[in-house]
Image 1 (cartoon, rainbow, N blue to C red):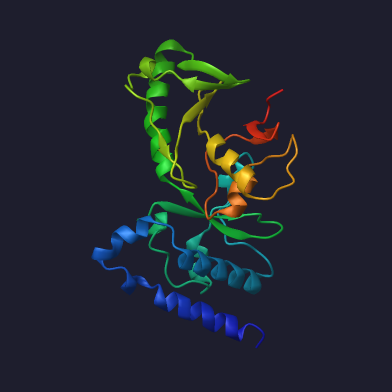
Image 2 (cartoon, helix red, strand yellow; image 1 turned 180 degrees about the vertical axis):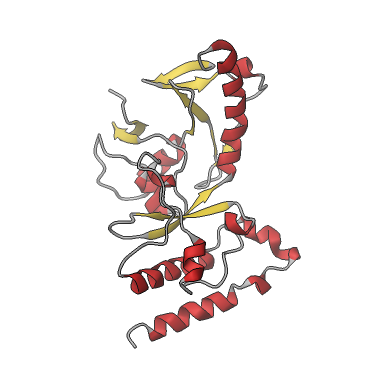
Length: 240
């Protein structure tokens, strides 16, 4: 009887947020983060853990998967365990633009979102970068930003103006950067700088400060390289 009230609450949330709530005229609303949907999935994850002795309903990913893209929620597992009735309307699995993932899986599992529009922006540039590399062997390096981090020379890959990515954290747009291997990442330094000034923290040089974004917003800073703090400003982790 210990979990009766929580189970009833989860069931009510699932009923309210079932597919009947999302007629065609409402589909646009599935493209925005929804606090109630996040809370519903959080409750479902906790319910699953209670049923399984602490296991998490996540997909198996390789150990070298970046930390913020590693622990994706497996909605099939949640449904099979009767922890959730329907996939949220804004989830990728249901035609939305977000993947649901877990932050701090070993200590304090929290349900967060990955904005897949970032993926599309990176992919469109990556296709051209790969085509350039196939012809020239090396990536289309622009100005060096830091050790191993470069701007992208968009002229070399036939893009007239640099694509600017809508930040999931603020109204600013974010640039893309490239490493020495030609991998493309979102540069979150603007949002990190704002977060360092907004939220209390104890970060020191050498710490990965991306968690200040993940812990204070619904979103994970996906497709990024590690950053740390130096002279009270965000810098790429390997900055001397």
